[in-house]
Length: 165
Ligand code: NI
Image (cartoon, rainbow, N blue to C red; front, side, top):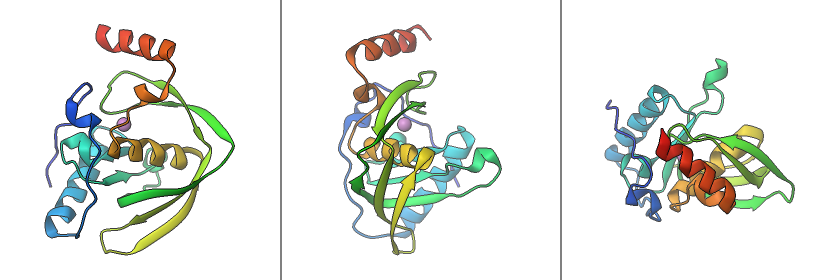
C-alpha cells in the first residue's frame, strides 16, 4: 500500500466535479486501500479520491476509529437520496485545508446510497458525526469545500487564518 500526498486548497483539482466509477477493477481496490491508509496516517476520519488527485466518485470514511472502534467504509458512487429538514451546525476540519476549522450548517441526518468494493449496494440512514462526515466527503466529489459552505464573513476569517499559517 502507498501513502499518497494530500492536495491542499487552492489546488484546482479540488474544485472539479469527479467522474462516476464504471467498474470496480484491481486498480480501484488498490486505490481504496491506499486511501484508507492515507486517511489513518493523516490522521483523519474521511478522505475523498480527488484529495489525492484521482477525480473519481469515491471516498473512504471511518467516523469512529479515533474512539477505538474502527469502522472503515468505502463508498463508491455515493448519492444522498434524502436529507432531514432539521439542520445542525458543527466544526469541520479538512485534510486539504490544514489548520482551518469551519463551522458548517448541514442537514442533521441523511439517507445515502453507495456501492462497496464487492459491488454490493448499501442504503443507510446516517446521523450525528457520520452524517456530517459523509456530506463533507461527498461535497469533495462535487468540488465543494467547507469554505464554500460558510458565509462571506466566516470565509474571510478562515482564509486569513489559512494564509497566516
Ligand atoms: Ni475535506
